[in-house]
Structures are given as structure tokens and as C-alpha cells.
Length: 432
Image 1: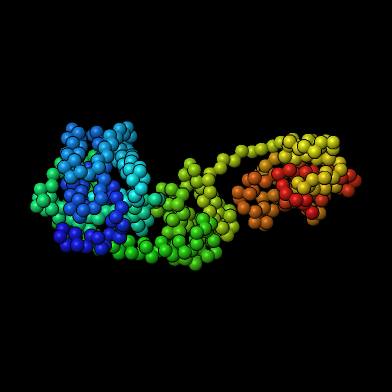
Image 2 (image 1 turned 45 degrees about the vertical axis):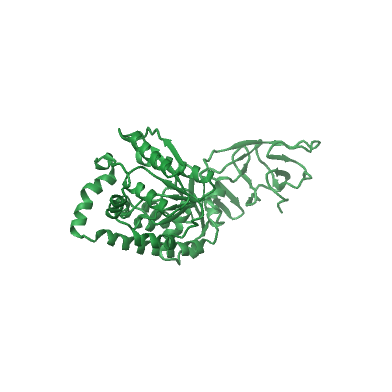
């Protein structure tokens, strides 16, 4: 620990003039962390969480409070009430929220936790079991920026045995968490069963995990820098350029966009998105969550908010030539309307009124002088993005004959006897 104390301020690249918000449970790891940082004469604030799950929880809180009072360290205490089947994940979310509240109040970005090398090994095993991206498989890193906050794990490359030795030599008070020895949680099951076997096979296992972590973090940093450079502050994937990236960088471009939009990452999702992006199908959608979807439209793709599609059909009214106010989105008239809105002239011999504006339907047909063409085929040939297709307005007569699709199609096979002017007030400029 003396060697580590000398390295600490050189290797942990943070501003030590700022306050450090220290998460202290009262167990061996966090109490040693608190004592170590106190001896470094740093400006500390302690945050303790009582999960109210154990008989000794109140005694543990009192012990941490007594320590902070003895050394005049500000103490923040939170009682957490969690009624969830996913207790550990919910508790982690609440702890992060309160730690960030304290850091924000103190105008500091730094939140310090006592994770160590044994924790790192267990995290790696869990990630291998559940699946992750390259950084997830690395386990953890000493310094992680999440939003406006910097999470610091100064003990990450120290073994728990070293922390126990420190506690004994410096008489650091701590309480043993009896829940660490139950098989209720996955981490405990690895700690109690798998890890002892692995250490028996290789006494230097923890140092191997440290090396593994450092190599993966270095690889991740290089790959992430390439992913960020590829996106260049844009949230749109240029698919032709994407195809020339290595698979590792492709995966991280996808992972980076998912992280940016706070979508839970797993390898299956990343692999599915990569296959969609590299496929020859021009328009595809991948649902990511209740809030987001990935939309591929020809040579581009981006993550967009999920929007439910509702079919719309409205009756188009004849314009009142005396009125300059148009409350409806569409109108028609026998004479040109003086307007800057989008307007088209339709020539016809016979169409059946009323006219309608609706969204597209399967089986819609367009008419040309050379024959007929499915609207679906037309949209593919014109490379109209899927999102735009869903929002197209189709103007029909009462027999569902397509007259006009603003900005895309005018039916010129209706005859020449009479003229009709249709105006779209949601459009811009006259359509030529």
C-alpha cells in the first residue's frame, strides 16, 4: 500500500483539489478506501446507503457515522426501500442517482468507489456469462466518465488480501456483510464456487485478470477512437463507408450510438443491427426499446424515437374563393388559388367526388401513359426512405383512384376536358 500511495496521485489522473464523493458501505473494502484517502489529506465527503436488508444495517451505518465524526468528514445517509425482484440492479441505480445528487450539490464530478481486483474478476465472469461488448468483457476501468460525472476506482488493481492487510495494520474498523456468503446473487455464486477453483488452478489468476483487463481497455480505447472519428459528431451512419470498417469498429460504432441513446447493449442486438446495415435490403427498421428504433433508409441509418403509425384519411373540401383563411390541410377548386402553398393542376374528363387525402395502402396503383405501376415499386425505384413513405399523403377520388402524391406523382391520364386545382397547405412553394 505504501508503493500504491506513491503511485496514486501520479496514475489516477483527476483534479485532487476537488472534493471526492466516497461511497462507503462499512465493509472492509470501502472502510480501507476511506481511511486511505483520509491519510492522503484529500477533501472528502462520505455517502452511506442503508439497504435495510440485514440485521446489522443500522449498526453499520452508525459505525461509518462515528468514523466520519471522529475525523470531521461530512456524512450523507440514505435509507433505500426497494421492492423489486431485480434488487441489485435497482439498488445500483438508486445509489448512482444519490451519489450524483451529492456530487452536483458540491460542484464536483468525482465519485469514488472501492472496487478491487477480486471484484474485477467476478465482473468479467458475469460479463462472459451474460454477453457484452469489448469494454464490458474487460470488466471495469479505473476512471469512467458517465455524463457529467467521473467514477474513480483507485483500488481496481489491488487484491482484497492487500486491503485486509492494510485494515489489520492500521486498525481500520469495518463490518462483515453476511449476505456475501449466500448463494442468492450470481456474483456470490461465482465468488463462493467458481473463483476458488480458478485460483487453485492458477495462483496468479488475479494478476492475469489485471493484464487481461488492461489489454482489453487499451484495445477498446483504440477502437472507440476510430468509431468516434467515423461518426464525426454525427448520429447518422454512412453505410457505404461503414462497410469498409473492420468488424470490431463496426460493432463499436453501433455500441456508441446505443450508449448515446441510453439503449441497453447486448451482443445479439449489435450483431442484428450490423447484419441489417450490411444487407442489400434498402429500408429496414430495428426496434431497440419502447422509445427508440434504428431506421435504415438506403445508404444511411440512424436511431430515431419510436413513432406509432396511425392511418389517416380526411375528406378534402372545396375552397371558398372569398376566404383567405384555410383551416384544412387540403382544399380543391376549379380555379387557381393565389397562395404560396403547394398546389397542383389536375386535368380530367371524369372523376368521382368527394376527394380524399389518406396514407398509402397495400395495393395502391399509379397510372401512366404506358400502363400501371404499383406504388410500392415506385417508392423503391425512387429510393424514398421508409419513414417518409409512412407519412406520404395520397390524394384520391371517391373511387380510390390516385390523383396526386405531393412532391412525387401527378396522374396525367385522367383526360383533358376540365381542370382542378388541389392545394396542400402543409407544403411549400408551388409545384411545377
